[in-house]
Image (cartoon, rainbow, N blue to C red; front, side, top):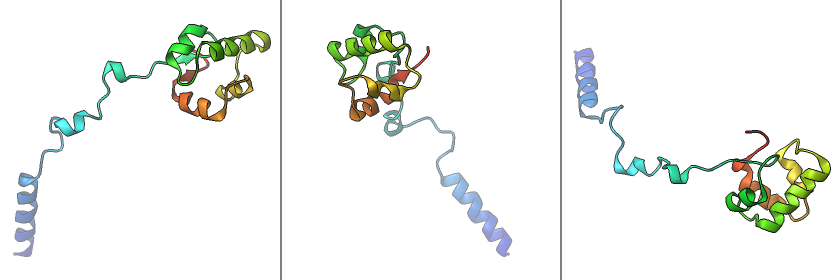
Length: 105
């Protein structure tokens, strides 16, 4: 009798619970990224100053030109952290932009 009661309770809970593979609701759709929300990547070894200034937070044209001048003088960046060697680029700027920074395409 106990087993039948347990099975009946389990069956009822499965029947009354929302389906596991249900369509996303309006609440969960806010977690979906639209094309406008997708972060663009910037290859710091090849990007132009204009592209860096447009796509990176806290990097204007002057800082982007400083990045390129450093790259031209010292060769390609070997790590994203090497940006800290560029005058005017600090830890906060690096961390804000880390998800978008790439060393290769």
